[in-house]
Image (tube, rainbow, N blue to C red):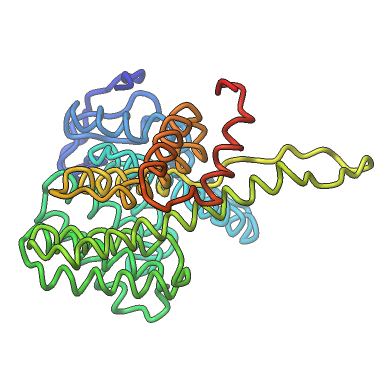
Length: 371
């Protein structure tokens, strides 16, 4: 955990004046000694805010929370307001990104302060009923549910749902995330039929937003499969698990094919143009975390089945091998790839597919793998 580097200053406020804690809005008794414009009810809330986001934005808050200067003209006043809004938009994006990163890493407690900041900045810029608030509410809801705070998660989801219902302009991507969180909420409460309804809507909206083959729908399928699995409806559960694996397998295969084509047929170089190093980063942190989580869970289920099916286990391992390669974990990708090749030899009339062969050839080009 990061240490607090800024001193806390006890507040001595004039009688009748009250300031709210940055996190809980309760009566503040302490002030950040770094920026001097952020207040807390106790040391625990200051520490939580510092670890989550305040360390990154401490000094950036000063021009937003101090009195505006006196302007000599309307033009100057307008320019000052535009600068303030621009700063708040920047901080809304920054805090949302930090909150999303913590969430993707499973650090639900650390995600909450950053998401609260994102919510506040968006309210300042867009108002309290804008669709721009929904992503922050959804992060807060998912983090709360992850911590087991079901009632708090439900409250955040109600806020997000109300905004979506009032704004026809909300995108299918936002509605997909809303329905997924509503599905998880109902699943946590044991309302499985309602959970399946919302998760089905999650899949539908994800397909509308990103296409029927997009990886955005995989999470909805996975959570639906988990519900059917725990209800002992194994045929449906395993069918949905297979759909999840198939979605990620196809997605990673396309990425591997692209890299293989680049390796075998390098583009012509224009000597007059600046050289640009190709990037191998093909997945964002949230996608990496989700793929690793769902595929590892499915692999565990496949391996612990009463009658393990080698072909299905091999496909999950192949998909995980591609994921590790794309995440630059070459030794793990090599280990899993060899395991898949060994399994393939044990399967009757089964040949390694072209995607696996291309993956192993790509791995061999890496210096960390013995030739």
